[in-house]
Image 1 (tube, rainbow, N blue to C red):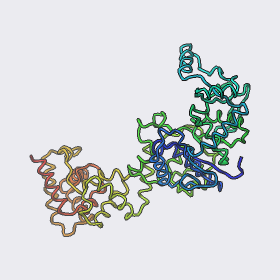
Image 2: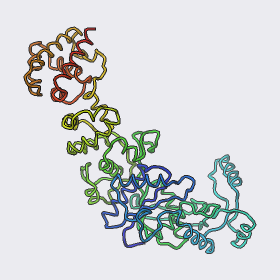
Image 3: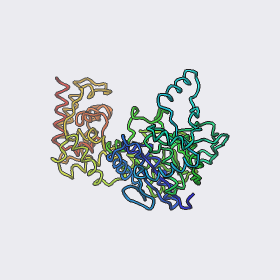
Image 4: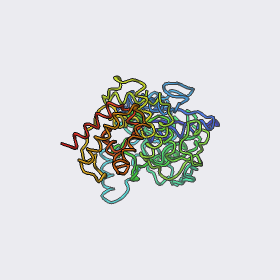
Length: 486
């Protein structure tokens, strides 16, 4: 094993960056940086039918957006390239030949139909299917003659009998697996290309990977890969397996239960630093009560000892809360700039108003907004009148339509005469009217709020009215009176 800390992430370029791969990449990145090591991005594109360049670049974009930078990779080069598995076929084939020559692997000529028939028979008997070693004793010379005659075999690993596989998992402590748990599994396809477990072992060895840190769903692969390491005479790296990421119903995170790709969260308007911070807390804790952390703070505090064994819960509400914290820390100018594309996409006329006015409305909502995609709904009433049912004007006031209408007429008359349209003058005038009417504060303030915004919940009422301005506020109060008297 290499003395230098070298870790890697090896995603398959068959789609956008999944949250699970993002978390694995982040943990590897934090581990490397906290130990002055190297973080490598390797592309597992041996699935030629499903792998695409578009997906590969989407993975790069996802990691870059999250602020996770790799030291070596297909786009950056390095001393241990190439970093795409599809470009390493010659290396794989030389290793495969060595496995065959040593007797640690053998050609298997059983057809797919034959295997399927045996598997079905085992299932009907309520037994676990295991390969029956039919081709195990075919010599290499015999196999090569059959291949020369046109047969296309797979290659299987010859599993030693009575072997106990033991390794110390950096997250799960000691793991013990007996070789009898596996049959002679296939390691090479009929076309000569290696399957995942073989290619991964060769690459990790050749790239001097010191620690293989990945999801718990790879535990079975790890046992298989240790058998391959042993067959090749390679030193073992250290292994660590992170917990699964579950949804709130404690089911494995899937597309059916919400967003699972980093790109989807980016498009919704989450901040990359909030997303990275949130992902880091999916199965890891810094050891104190901190939840909001910079990348540098995470690097300083990260350790495998604090990676949790229990499943991590992807709580969207917590992500929204954390993102809201980051939004509140942004400068008003930057927040406004970042919100404008979302408002423009919703066809709100942001380009027809002054920048100063935009800054004022964003200042009102900065404490409330949690994610940029909420912006069109949050800011809509500033740009246009919102339709609402007249019952919203009288709800919980215990007043009739007529009583509320007369009160709003009084509000309009009093506010029209104000010499200064400011938050303090507006509040003072309205509180005075509450006393004159003998009403409770909410009985008057709620109809005013609904009239000028179309909503029950808004930023502070009089701050909002100041920003909306005299004409728009009074015009909307007029419309509310009309609605109540129809």
